[in-house]
Length: 71
Picture 1 (cartoon, rainbow, N blue to C red):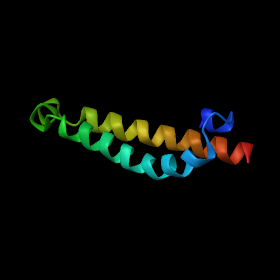
Picture 2: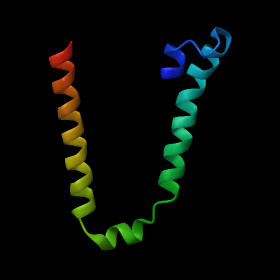
Picture 3: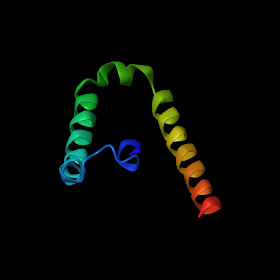
Picture 4: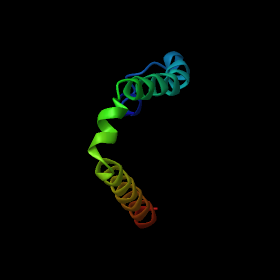
């Protein structure tokens, strides 16, 4: 985003990069999921799940508050 705003990315490459972004994000999240050991995660109990849910709620709340405050 910063490189695009600074004009470093050529206009010709912009559309291709925009189309490639969701594909790369999907691949990254897939790799993360494939690397997850669910047996070890289950052995840890509900704490990691609760922490992940709390972090999601916190980040969403802060994002919403900032969006309402700034826009």
